[in-house]
Image (cartoon, rainbow over all chains, first blue to last red; front, top):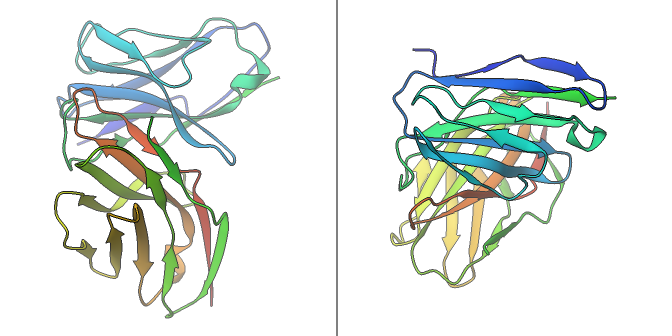
Length: 115
Length: 115
């Protein structure tokens, strides 16, 4: 049981480059989300999805795109990387948007550095 | 919007002693969910304990317990018999019961354990 798998674990980009952070889960979770973690800021929600074909913005969506073509995958795209996007990115999933006490299951994160 | 405040950025505890991590939140809702997550140096996000506001009884998970004061909007985490492996960053988080409810995190507190 792999859980939530994020790739890559580390990435260095130059300003203006694009890339996709991959996230896959094998738990048949309907709810998937992306967070970024910055020092002194906690985790902030970027985008989320409550099922295939449905996505919505979180707290800090600017500069990021997402799509959800399958239940399993929820990639995060940076179209033109900026130094302000240097952060640790977490993908997390859960059974449904209304999960009660059910926790979010997190991937192990991707550390992204934009120079 | 709900906010979660962890006012202590760092704390330290002697091995085998007890430590309490503070968390307050702001909400106008009557029912909601509260969580504590642990993030060790491995970066993995691990659920420590969870509580539903509707239930007044404080949650307990082995050495971890909470002091939930609904009127004061306080949700502190108590770690008993602290171990070296408890050294980590701890995040308090809030989730409402509504559809598409999101997890709102505090900024976190770094706990060190002295041998």
